Image (cartoon, rainbow, N blue to C red; front, side):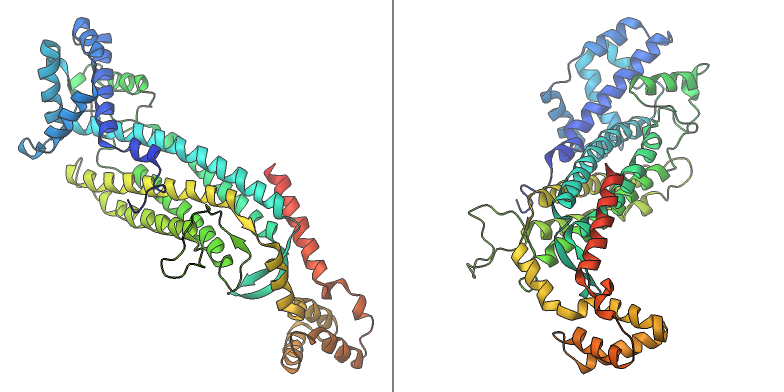
Length: 437
């Protein structure tokens, strides 16, 4: 209830128990069809199993039985036992030569393939929104902030433009990772395919190809680096997502007020102070990104598998993968929506520029003076001028001091004008946009 409208159903449905059961059945059918192709089981049995309709009621019964799977110690055997009851004699050929983890690992890879597709589509959508926001704001002057303090003037577009290559790198990492998380399992009890000999490896390869996957070079029942890579990738994206949401959150603070989230007319910010419209979405995105990273941290425990296989670790791994995927995708999608609906308060942006006044060009004054005194001495001198003046008259004070030092023509130097920095930021923004296009 607390996350209604924020957790995204398409990723939740992907990792739901109902979907998992259907994937198990899909894998079992692919195995019997392949075994029939290799004349290892009767073709009639494979045809009968392929024709069986696993209905929602069947799935519900599997889920009810799975609550008691500790009785067998093996959830897949509980699943197969139910299927044998439903399909009759052909059920004797189910799970022929496979180990339970073949099925669960291969199902996991099918889920990861679907999950990475969702992530890829959302990253594409986010990049398109950032580019549009950057284009819209590329010429709007604002103040950069370093260490929370006013710095040089830039443009709002420049602020967003710098994130375009960042999220493109996340997209490139995902594309590079995708082939590694398209390798199924189906390699038998210890990874040798011995139960299917003399065609063992070929049978495993054919099952995987039937499912749209590749055969691994070596079994990975106990080797989980690929799963750790996937979770780590999400955690890396979440660091970027949370930082962007934090930026939007901070720029909505009453003392700043440069941005505002899109709100419905009935939005309520505070139950006690009716005037408030809180930055709720940016706050929720930050929380979801943090949840993804917290859940994902467990993946490093899950990779410590003893010997060739150890079932208990897989449960911890599945929690890390499913929860990180759900929270991470939800945060990413909500960030896209947040940026798409974000409003810019132009009047407040201008007011904040006025508030910074002459101090915003202190670097320009220093660089002009550095040509005469050297950089370190100029920095020290400008600091003294700042302390001896106010933000309103710093520039005029500095010009008088330089004139007294015999430095002429500074008034015409573009480096002491805010427009100089704004124009540079706008050109850099346009260059990034051109690269993105």
